[in-house]
Amino acid sequence: MELERQSKSKASLIFVILLLLAVLGLIYLFIKGKSKLVSPVPKEPSFQVIYYTPTPGITTPTSTPSATPKPKKTPTNTPLPTKAETTPAATVTPTAAPTPTAKPT
Image (cartoon, rainbow, N blue to C red):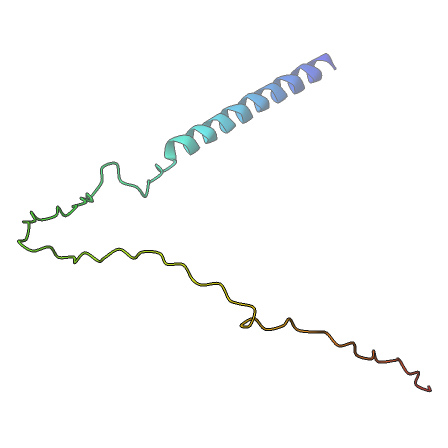
């Protein structure tokens, strides 16, 4: 009985060691055989964007001014309306309010 127990424990120990080696081997093969991730962005730019800002040309002064000066407007007072020119305010006439009627149902 003691021999059977020893042989079973040795067999299970060997099985655990082989299983552990197999798992470690699969992990190693998975990591080593894994293809490298290809980045969609290149390491160096394949083109350069160059912004050109146009510089204004040299302007020469003209002999005559391009804008004509306008005379300034002076403020004037408006006359106040007299009593004869004013119209009376609107008057409100009372109207009869509609009365509700009951409809027979």
